[in-house]
Image 1 (cartoon, rainbow, N blue to C red):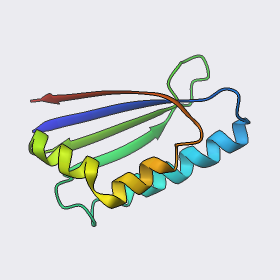
Image 2: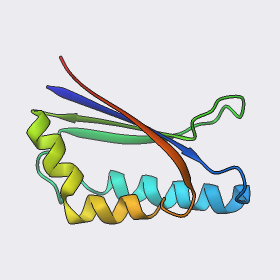
Image 3: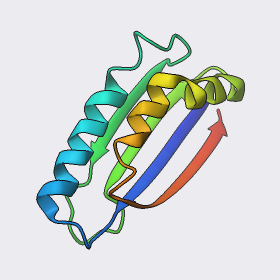
Length: 99
């Protein structure tokens, strides 16, 4: 099994209300993907509640293989979800590891 962890930092120069709305739309879009992308075994998105921390959004996913992660990453519905953060995203970090 491959665990897929992604962190997003949203831009501080954008109003909090705008960042929060984008984050919520992203969460909803990602968590709606399992019925559309059959390689997803589990996926969840958490919005950071601790203002003292750097990262705004955490995405956790489980896949059978790294090839499945790649299929998910290039799926049109996933690409569309990612675009929901395009205007507000400052940075992204990702780790994929096998257990």
